[in-house]
Image (cartoon, rainbow over all chains, first blue to last red):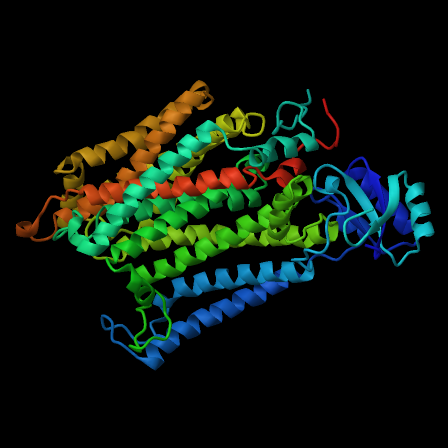
Length: 173
Length: 452
């Protein structure tokens, strides 16, 4: 219960939060995160976060799926036990397209979700929400422990945040 | 003169963000009411009837069904296509309308996606029990190394179906669950009971609403929507290949893939309207699933109904234009042969009755839309019946023509499938948020407090 997770301050809505992020960054503080019940549009730009790299995972996953789908069908139909079906060639690739397509989608979708779980470090059951209201109707900025408490609290105060206090990794106190 | 654009109010009643949580999560936190228990008992009863008849069928064999020569496919295949079709509206709402930035989808996407998953679970039962010995189905359907060293036939549309429906189920389930994570976290955070908090903590994976997480999360939502869109089109196209690839008049047509997809969306939207009308009354969600939402769905029903009507007439035109006597016979036999009653039930329910939605009064009337949605469901079930049975019962050799009559087992197992579907749907309404809370908050006016 004593590992500090940073310093929290609340705002009335997402727009106020975006203004505050710019003000905090102007003070040279980059170690922060915003918490809200739904995504705040414009957060990436305001916090200068790069666009998510998950689409590259999707592409690689899809390509893997496409190849696996073809190899599975080619190997079973033309190599391991070739069976003459209606006089079609053993490698009747046009008939393999539907399954290749489905494998592409399956691998792409599952790899994207897996990437999201890994990059967001989920599941993480030890970490509870800092405040139950954050998944309901509260908008908060948390300055991470890299910034010492006094400086973080002062910075939040200049942006008009309310309810400024320290939060801890497990639960909040 | 300038026109001022006033954005449509998607949530009525001046609700705040906190009200959203209270209204949507409350039904999960109190003991279910009498209506819920009544519905659940009826669903369990229907399912039990189906399960008993299915058990009897496994012991005595497929002979208890109405199948005969030449009707090798019957009610089970009709039910399979029907249920897969029902599922498609959920994906259309969650994926296609997402890509088109249709914000009204937020009110219905969660329950429509749940409907997709349960409908596909119901559909999957039919091909498996239709094998007669479902404990061998794994060996017949999936390509895994086995002691016979035989592989499945990848040139068969029936096997494409296994991959298409399997992928569809997996991706829909994952898409739905990813959407649920933030809402499960909301329910965890408002839980007073220790056990409930524990369950929803596990289910929500420790989601905290960090915007760094939201950034990746939104990207994944968009990717899944982008992947689901071609997927849903492929699934019913491949289901239609089950018929279109066969050289049978009435099945062997190139119009089948788009015709099946349009029909699937048509029937699926009708089912969404049926379920939404019930759910908004049962859980008092009138401010979230508004008349405006229902009207939009009715417009989709009318539009896809017209596409389906066009497909029916186009099939007849091609049957004549192709000059094939077999094709011509099949279609005349469809409308005026022994199964004329099925054909005209289909045409009335799917093409004529939805035309009432040209009137705004009908589109915005709850009783009218409820009745029309039931008719569309009946009509779309008959469409599959017409496709399967009328094409089969009179084949090339008149001496083998036979009338197909479904038996008690056919009907009882169909009834059981409705029970199975509603058991899952009612449990969903009971344990999970039926409306996507995080998404609906993002389309509400920009303030935490009361607006207006």
